[in-house]
Image (cartoon, rainbow, N blue to C red; front, side):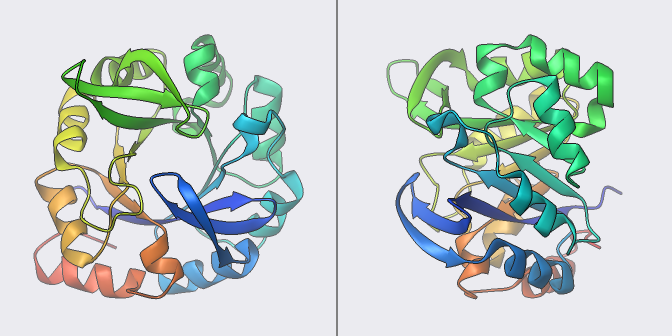
Length: 252
């Protein structure tokens, strides 16, 4: 039986954790190093750190902050934001990350997925997909640059493509649901989970423990990620896991 994972996410801008709604109206949510230590103690299965302004501003992820956060963690740690080349991946992994997350760079230059998977192994390469429903397309479209730019890719097709190129995990964020706390987007999560052979982490929309249950069962996600409900202590990793266990979901 597959163990489902609960993953807090640190969206970092200028060295501070921030959180918004649908990628805008960002508010301060604390110090990344303190929050990382807190989530490790809380029993989080992994931690994701996204330097959300790196690709947009065209600069590198804050290696020093990554190093400080990694020093506090005993759990797997994924870092994304401004990682464009094999050299960037080496830098981040040397700083203490266990996996790198590629988003904009993967769309612009898909070969970077192949290169990373070949050099480090697929388990190190996460592709983050920002998805938004497109009325014209009648499906979900892939966005880049922190949700600013629409691409030609449809989400399920892109998910299949990145897996074919060697990515070991997909971090799927629903932009429509991000920060709304109305529940994860079950439709897009289920569509991607059923289309690929690698684990899918659902992101965007967590408001309570039941939402985690829905996306891990109905949405067929392997893991669920949340930010604001954990940062602002609306619930805790511990409480979510207890709820899931009581409802028969296999969690650590």
